[in-house]
Amino acid sequence: MQRSLEQGMAIKFCVKLEKNAAETIPMLKKAFGVDCLSDRQIFRWHKAFAEGREDPTTRTALDGHQPPVPTTM
Figure (cartoon, rainbow, N blue to C red):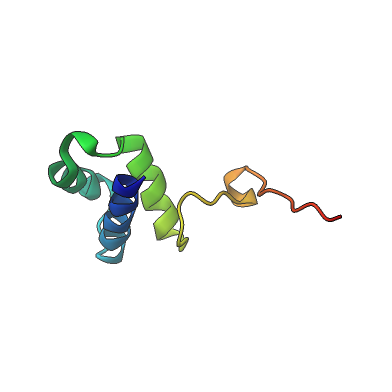
């Protein structure tokens, strides 16, 4: 969990530097080596940060996923 959090911060940093996902992947692979996220996951998180999300793991209706509906008692 901690490693993916660090990589998420690194991806967000690359987005702020206006690096595209293809430029971000080799930098993360060099920095994190065998512990690096998959290319697919980097692309997903890069897109999420580029769209303005703070947490790339939060799903929205825009992703085709419905967020959990709170239950009331």
